[in-house]
Image (cartoon, rainbow, N blue to C red; front, side, top):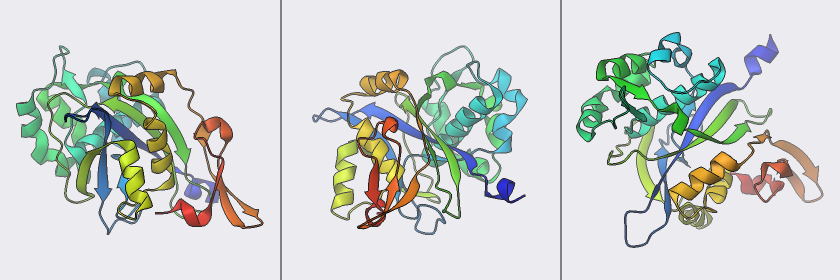
Length: 264
């Protein structure tokens, strides 16, 4: 029974990228800042995301989402789209004829985000009523992290990358996400060094990988070409103290970091 109780909960998180809309060109990623009252990642800047809900695996999604995925793989992507809607207001969907969701339609659905947060199965009903179909094929696998066994709250988190829907406007929900920003990956990492931003370890390392791409198109191409390696950090003792260890084949350019430097 303990194995079932302690099993990491499936979760999805999304790196939403775009090209900077300012004279200073470059790749930007959408980050949201979690509420200080959250039990996990309080006050940290994160990618939108959260746990997979039972309704994300509903068979009715057959007619309201694209792509041919196995049951679990599709539920991860539907959870990703749902969490993006909840936390940012962006809708990763088109009309059933493939036409983009209009800015006006997206704005009209914005008040329903709190409904979805409270009742995840409401997301399917909203998509049906709006005549929208989730574009799951645009969600590209980017990384896979499993929370270490010593943590009390554990998640089996799949990271996806997607290009931001054109013309849609981000609105953080004001509850779980109390702020948002489109930022260059390295800019946020630098703010963490000066104490201006809090980043969790997986977030920071995935920002470093994302920073290797100059544009949103480059980032998507790189994600489609990479092999995703599961990372479940382990703690090991070293002469200088405990370190968190990850596999070299994950491609993050480091294999260990002192525990005191992991957080923050």
